[in-house]
Image: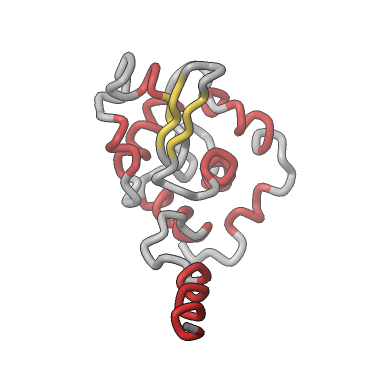
Length: 145
């Protein structure tokens, strides 16, 4: 009985190895490789900051905002009403494509969004947490790109 109890306890403490959350430097490298460094004048630090405040680096995050009636998908919590197949589909892709940890579709859609007149201001969390931050450099501390 003690053995089964201990094994059960260990099962609760072990973190799954296929967890979706990516490390900060992994996110930075993927965004850099995807061409977001200085894309439309926004530094890589801005993109990493945005990813943190939108999804805490979880490329598979889905957030349903019932008050504003939208669902955010993926690393940048791209909204379904305008950008993917459950709305206007301006990114010409399915919302589920934004949930891939390789980030290719997420980066492609983010480029489409940031080319718009609001730029990164399309994400309120960027405006609140990243736009005027004097500590953006910390988002790339220790990362080898």
